[in-house]
Image 1 (cartoon, rainbow, N blue to C red):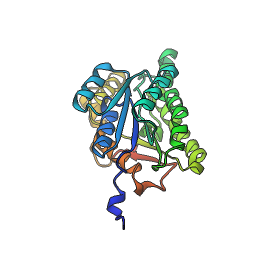
Image 2 (tube, rainbow, N blue to C red):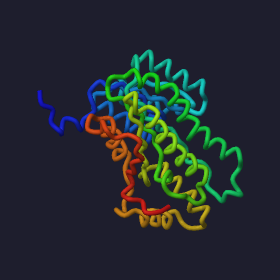
Image 3 (cartoon, rainbow, N blue to C red):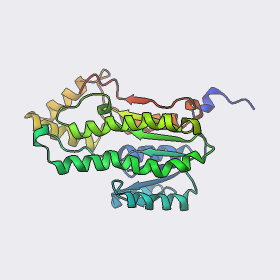
Image 4 (cartoon, helix red, strand yellow):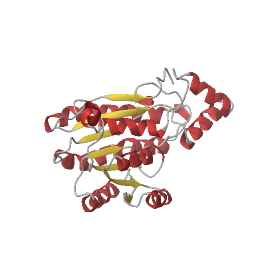
Amino acid sequence: MHTSIIDTLRPTPGLRVLVTAGAGGIGAAVARAFREAGARVHVCDIDRAALDRLTAEAPDITTSMADASVAKDVDTVFDDVSNTLGGLDVLVNNVGIAGPTGPVEQLRPSDWERTVDVNLNSHFYFARRAVPLLKASASNPCLIAMSSVAGRLGYALRTPYASTKWAIVGMMKSLAIELGPQGVRVNAILPGTVEGERMNGVIGARAAASGVSAEAMRDTYLGKISLRRMVTTDDIAAMALFLCSPAARNITGQAISVDGNMEYL
């Protein structure tokens, strides 16, 4: 039977999907989108209350409570994935924190280390456990790493965050080469300024560090975006769905910005 191009834009129903930090924000939007597309979804998160809210809304999404920066917690997540999904076709490595804001000479080493632990080490911990399962998948296996527009632009006063997001792109590029011969595709999504509580906090912190009002800082952010608007979590989720669809079967090793064209930071 002929398959139309339109049909290839939809992920194959029944995909087994793991979303890290999947109980809120971008992660929850991605988890909901895959569920609506017919996937079987497991999420992990450090926030028990957020996990409870998600499962109350969508009882068929299975969950693990875990600190993604702790390798033993990640091992527990994969024990749960084995029990609930029986394998894996898609990993959405979404976990990340904002990290500290301030001049580099004023940053505490402990804050730097925590940002690296959560934003970068966690991606390694999940990738190393997910890759054997993805290699065994026959369903167009895909690893998506959530980076940031700060993974392609410098970001003054946010050095720890930007450094980890650039590193995620480097990890993605390397894994795409490493895993391509086994048919596993690896891409990164680089969200821009995402509307929501987290961005409000980032804008507030940067405004305080710069000595201006939060309203003025928000206008400054919008002025850097060609479309003059922030993106939504659903915009990011839509890209994740596309990257896991048959239409994207030859897309790998790419850092794809979803940011309205952020011109600079």
